[in-house]
Amino acid sequence: MNIKMIACDLDGTLRPLSAEFSPRLKKVVTQVQESGIRFVLATGRMFRSAEPFARELGIRDAIICDQGGTIRDAHTNTILFEKRMPLELARDVLVHLPTDVAVLVCLDEEFYVPRLTDMERSFTESHQKHLHQIPDIATWLPKDPQKIAFVVEPDDAPALLANLRARYGDLAQVVRSHARFVELTHRDVSKGKAVEWLAQYWNIPREQVLAMGDQENDVSMIEWAGIGVAMGNAIAEAKAVAQFIALNDDQDGAAIAIEKFVLNGGV
Image (cartoon, rainbow, N blue to C red):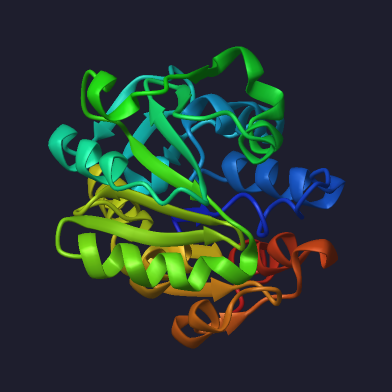
């Protein structure tokens, strides 16, 4: 298979949680791009949070952010595609906020919270100057946000996910992006649709796209790509739609998979 485009999740795929990129991965990303293959970072993070990692890896092509709601040129930072959550829907979500969960409203690369708990602080520790407390956030919200993220204990995430899907499943994309994160975006947004958009933008056939990830929000792109790879540490839903299972994120699984399927041409 002559792969022309690679789309990879960040946390839990290219980068083990709370760890650094491996030298092997950095070398592989460089080799891939030098050979003319498009390399795309596909993450649920906002651009502000994702860009330093893309820069460290030397990614030159594109960054998919906000669960697929934003696509930026990695070289110029220009927005190539954007689809935000409708304002009235976002306000409704915020009016009906559960009282026992932390929430982050992501708007124009800033974080807004109705209450500032230790949980919000812990997940925005490196972005404190971009964190703003707005008590009456539903009334204040001035325009369409990129997304709304809920942060809960892992054991509480399935129930929250089910409740949000029951209420907003026809109106928004509701995904679990991390053991502790449940996120809402525009209903037509997903990593899979963003990868498809970029492939069409670059005139690359689906069969020549490889996508790799580990969480529920990666399922759409793993399923859409010509070669779909789930990490060894991936959830069952991601593994179920993948054609291949890589080693774990802390075993250089992503780098080894790219070497096998792209640089060495083996399927």
